[in-house]
Length: 265
Ligand SMILES: [Ca+2]
Ligand SMILES: [Ca+2]
Image (tube, rainbow, N blue to C red; front, side):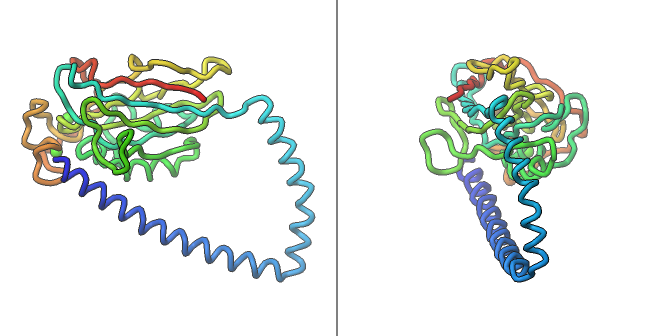
């Protein structure tokens, strides 16, 4: 199973690397276009005239900084499942900082088909991260792929953890999702509203485990956790199993599988 996940992740990272190359080409084209603009006197004049506007923007930024200096948060998701009902790996997951409700998923509705299924069934967060990054209400998005202390992407086994860091200001919420690997399509995530990262102007810190739920994505029929032939550790390839076509719902009875803490520094 671990090899299979590693292979899937390696493929995902390879695809991401290819995408990066395309962006590099686009950046080169942009630079060339900018050079052309510099050669046009009229356009240069326009740019100089906009300096005043830029000054106004800088003043606004300073005012913003005084009132809402971003706080730097670090979230750690520890796998404590060896002391819980069923020992399970966690899989690489996705996180976002957002201002809208029900951004990563919506409790009680069918999966939107934007990448959550692959995260919940196969431990692949790449598609969901791409979808969420495109939303105007998402200020930061990313994947957590490497267990703490490791330099390779892979599952977080019992006793290990994932961590990720981001900046946020009052009004921001955190959502994330990571697969309960010994299942067909279950994932750990905060309630669909996300975690309000501030209490007034004060950053929220400490143990937030009680804010995290276990959810059934409703995309694949459930087998007995830890035993199903279509679950990630045993399925012959990703996306193996019967379609469920059900709304996303909460799953109980697996308290203590993870522990989540937030620090600010
Ligand atoms: Ca299911
Ligand atoms: Ca499956």
